Image (cartoon, rainbow, N blue to C red):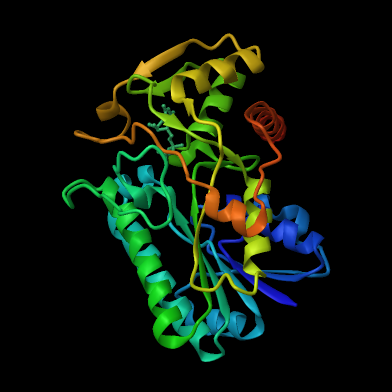
Length: 327
Ligand code: UDP
């Protein structure tokens, strides 16, 4: 069976492609390398069941051909993260909204199953202890760029639900809560790869704000296994699922854990939000998923705990730093 992964050279996409190959599927990857990297999939390029196409969702003929050949489409091509939208809001909004729209239009022809990746950012600044799929989404004003990322993903979700209800396209939506692991880059602001890199290189570990904001962290391997299980679930069309972790940790405690575990001499420093992002930046004080739905549907139980995640990220980063040093 052919499976298309848009954004397959990205962090989550490359792990998904790898897992699908292990499961015996034929994988088609489309990536324009805007935030993805070909090094993420170098080890897959010679696999007999792997095809890589460098191109964008806006290469109409290429995308149509790939959608026609695929039986299931995992749509992970997107401009990811709050940092990126602050730096380049026009490109981020257009990529996320128009990209999903063109894909859904093509999928409609043969009602191909489309898996849309969304984000816990859509819950915005809701003050609930845990966010569940049917909750209200609470965003800030449009003058603050950061909310544009959530808004673009919310529109993707609305489009997905509309194509499902009105046009019969089987769409499944995942909301990722801080998915981390090997190959993730800190370039776009993500906290764990940044802390691990800082710890390994002896640079200061930069905690934004007071560090009391909390998150859960989930290994990408646990996330992709759950995505694939639900993608093949006969009743999952039209459903939205949170994917995330069960244990909340403050960002300051995360910094301490990384430092201790990697025996790093790096100092932990505090950086004000306006320096790290933009004036008036609003961070989420807490963000934890309600996982009852995904647990009920597929018995979701992450295998990696936080220490194993940190060690895995560090192992990968050490290798990358060594190979860069040799160049
Ligand atoms: N963060 C931090 N230092 C960094 C990068 C991020 O303290 O070098 C904080 C960020 O402000 C947020 C948390 O870590 O409170 C998680 O950030 P990330 O961008 O990884 O994901 P988010 O939860 O914001 O989507």
